[in-house]
Image (cartoon, rainbow over all chains, first blue to last red; front, side, top):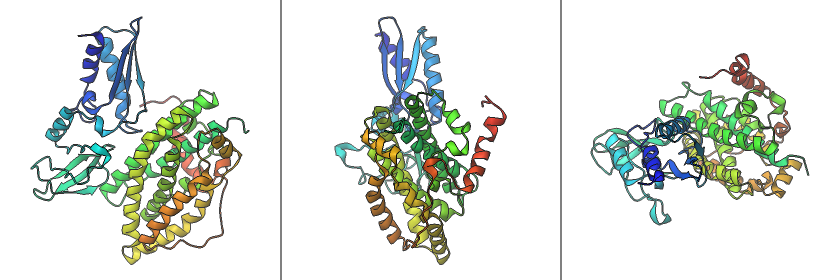
Length: 159
Length: 251
């Protein structure tokens, strides 16, 4: 395993502070890892939302974990471009979200918003659900309810 | 050319975001439903993030190296260049929703234009903000329709909110030497050019909500030059108090 792969694996495995079931690699927050000839490590991360309060914690966690791996010279940079999208969430991340009780964002292939694909209830799997509130407990979530089992659940907003 | 036109133009946007963010944050624990308490404070958080990014860019452009906190907490009223609309008091829920509709529609048009800014950092901030602001506008639109085309009481409150806030919308589209120079540099749009898109959307939503735009001739202005309405000083005093009373305080 190359050094970059190892750093990517260790940094990527850091849990998101607000949704600890998911790692920052699952969410697509970890963007790039580089090492220059002098051994300096550069890591790029990107926020899900502009004011995401978890980002400062993530930045500190990444820096600390990589230093613990023996890399003394580490900088973690926040990059905004290209803008984060739920398309970057991994398949493993989507499965973990559902298991955690949060309906994952739908894929937006072919430049068409997946409006015809149902948002399924993470409890009973019914495709018949409706939105209760545009906004939820974090910036990246909305609140829905299942018509079949009546359960209220968060939905990871498509973005 | 106005010296530092680019920095002043980014500061205006940052101040709009910060002041509107603080107004919305004042709803925390006061909104009519839990869902909307969460919605308004979520929008406030997005706006705060946008403000921070634009202050950081402003500090690079104006060369002062000021921190985000310096801009937010250490400037006096006259140094703020936000528009008057964002600083207006929250009033009732209808007033806040209408202010959100008017502001987010304006901000969306502005961010969309800024995605092609010649300033790469501003374009990157804008690309993120567009997605967030579309969502803010959706929220305000839904509520405008429900309240405007709702009960007699909710309709009446929306009409009152329109009468109170509409005069402040003229200022949004005023051009001056700073905005023309910034547009000339390709940094940002001239506010005048945002008018058509804003008009089209607002007219359609108000129409669907059975609301009629009041005829007003009063067009208050001055925010972009640091001349604010009375409500702003009180808001700023509350917002800055902790930081100024305990310099260097952290969580």
